[in-house]
Length: 298
Image 1 (cartoon, helix red, strand yellow):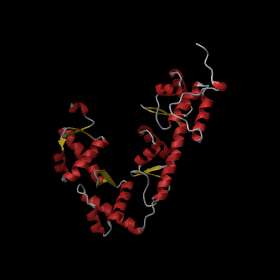
Image 2 (cartoon, one colour):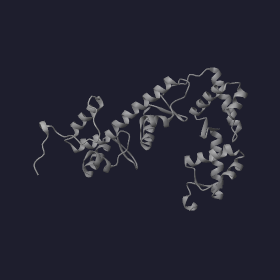
Image 3 (cartoon, one colour):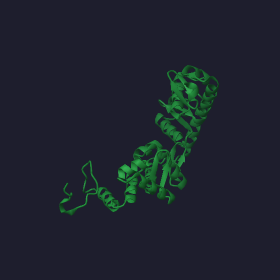
Image 4 (cartoon, helix red, strand yellow):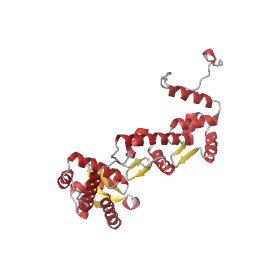
């Protein structure tokens, strides 16, 4: 076979399965960085991890993306880990320090933008943040922990906030929040609806909905699905009742759980589904079992 040559003496960096947008700065920077890495196995392995962003990669995946032998990748990872340049997220793989730092910067920007657009809310929903960052779920959990420990963002109840941020609430709103929380706490497993809250607090429905969002941000009330809200203490109490019952009786049906907590079908059934999603229980047919006891359920 004749030696292959390129027209004009150029060097082929990599194959490309999509057309490049040559006037986009990020495309040019990406190619420049790869050009700097192309002559080194170590640098190509690093480039593959950086290009993956906040998606954990295993050695074989890095090898394939960087076109580097697996043995070389494993050695590079050991050196990078010793130098604090990569993080391992068992059992999913490795992410590069630069990717984590860049994702933390973007996360802080997203949370800050949310504060400016919603000064009365406590913070940004983590699920929304993960969607906007297009981050892998497992790596995103690691990112939140690292960002929290680094003081870049902090978790407050069920949301993310910039350290030092305080929701801009009036005295009347704070008083109304306390009234709504008390109503949910007193109601237990039969929480009040919006209409009842409007009547008891003399507030418009839109105002009540806004305040419910704030309480949800704070983690004081929990949306268990289908728009059903409970006070967090009621959710914790229901979980204990459910776990204690299943520890003794092994299985439970939805009607039995409804009767056990003295609630209605409308309230009890979404609560059971919530515990399924949370990983407390597993559903088989019409019955629930403790997820931590799979062998006994077989």
